[in-house]
Image (cartoon, rainbow, N blue to C red; front, side, top):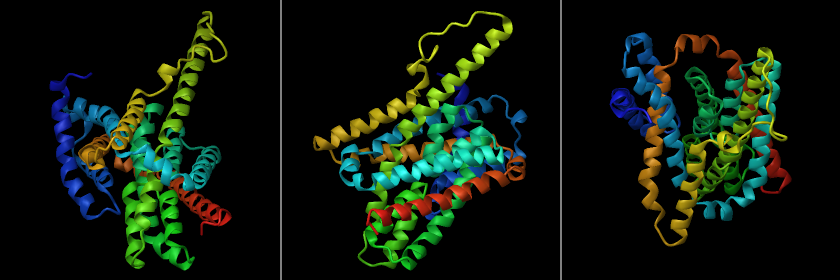
Length: 357
């Protein structure tokens, strides 16, 4: 663990930047605090370059990496697995279909557009699972750079806002039921704040509707996909590292040691520790609620998770060159748009096939 004295100033700066963004996010949930934080961080970085930050940069780097992982762990305290199993089971075929669609489309576009693999992975995972939270969980596993994380977050944000504004009207034009729109919002909108905004807008347009509750449960069910996705990516990265080490050994004329079918693969090394704690936090919440605890007890931890994500996004913004980001944004935006359209189409199509709409 980093020396607290060394990283405290940088952490404090990130917290100070996150605080006003937190209140802005409360006022404008369709945008969300993390997006405000990353934009503010990038704006500050234009005047305060990394070489001039001195020791403060250590704390900023710590916030962008470690605090982000702590945020994901705390996110687990917002998941009651029993409730998800009971209510979210109906949405599971649609969730699996939309996740598979985003990942397959993302891989095809990565090849066709010749995109950076890390950015393509982050956009595909963010589109398929749960926006910023999924990107936060995936970035450390694939060792993504801060600029890559910022690019992916920016793309996801763009289409989150579009979905929150367009989908309630689109659902009405298509004659969707309240339950159908809850499923649609929960599977076709990415970030929690935008899912909430879209479902709340629908409820406002249809007095007596309760799409918000349905959308929230579906969204939480999607969040669990973080676990298998990060595990697979961890295994892939471990195998990639082994292949690189083998290539280096071959070039140096050294013997290559292979152990079994997977070579020197270690599940312990491949599985991200913070994802294990995320899962344990979810289990702890489920057990506590089953034994009679009020789910509201965990609300402060959920709030802390959201604020930590906001701090981490401010740090990532500080480490991002916004000029370079804008210049290289064409392909990621195109990928995000195609993934977004495909996910929405599959969500609607699956509902129609299953007679849920």
